[in-house]
Image (cartoon, rainbow, N blue to C red; front, side, top):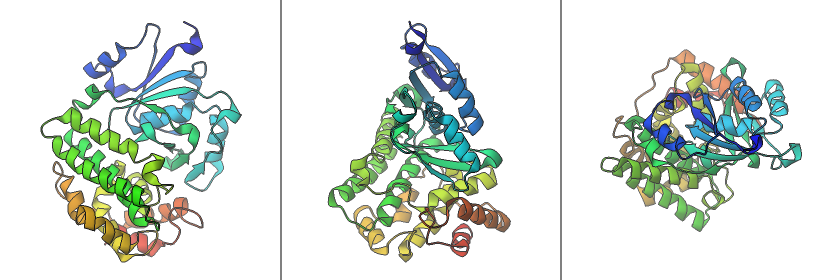
Amino acid sequence: MEVRNAPVVVFDQNLGGTQALSSYLAMMPAGTVLIPLPPTCTVQTVTTLHAQIEEYDNLFAVGGGAILDAVKLAALPNWSSVKRGLEVGRSGLMVLRGDGTAHGKTKRIEAVPTTIGTGSEASSVALVEGPSRRRHLIIGRSLRPRKRYYSEFYRTLPDSLLYEGAIEVALRIVGEYVVSGNSANATDELAVGMLKELRAAARRAETDRQESCIRLARVSALSHEKRATGGRNPFTWPLWYIANELSTECGCRKMEASIPLIPSIVYMARSGKLPWGRSGRVNQLESRIGNLDWFFAELMPAMGSASGAFWSDDVADRTARRAMLAWGGTGMPLEGTDMAELRNVLIP
């Protein structure tokens, strides 16, 4: 087999030795190259991987969102210039122009998720951690891979991660809905349908875990598609950006930081002040799926209701400053808010 055509499977090193990974690899042809990777997406990890896969064109990414994001970024022919941009830029947001072909041949990526929530297997975005643990959101058409689901990976997914994944998808759909100023009937109907399917699929987990996970993963992927967003930005709601910085300050996972913020964020959305939300849109959505606080609480059977803040006032202050520095300003996701509002969300 020609080197460039040899399949390369980049997988979460924590999957090594598991029955699920073994059965997946058994389907790959002889000569497949295996690259285990730590489940983090950092500039250093991506740079190392970029060099490892330089001679290969067919990539298979197996793991959670961090693994998939690392492969998507490492496959960029112009990763070196993207890296330089991250090193000198102040903003936490970077938009890639074009489809990547202007910088060289693009690689084929098949993403096989083993967790639920980010929808990285279907999205045109990637999150990477740079120096000083600062995270950057990179957006570009060239980052969208092909996707494939393998149910064996979901057999042993912990309850907490299953329900966290459902909540993450729901937050993405709800945030996009309540911030949007336009009411596109088809898009709104699809959003309501996705939220109802999330609730039904999460309930199904008690009797058929693998079916539940596949259904949740498909809704997650659908939430990134153009027909679901209607041209709206799925990364508009401030929750993602606040939780991103809070998780860095607290040294916890993004969803561990997100869940306690849900009551405050929903309250701010009901206030009708952008960028938090539009009160009319909140009322419209609640008329279809019920009270939002109750809706999210129903998705947390393995965790109980969203707990209160587990961070100090000092952490809240530092988080607010980090968020405004990385994501605030004209044309940025936190445009329209200020330090005082962010602090009120972090310490209601």
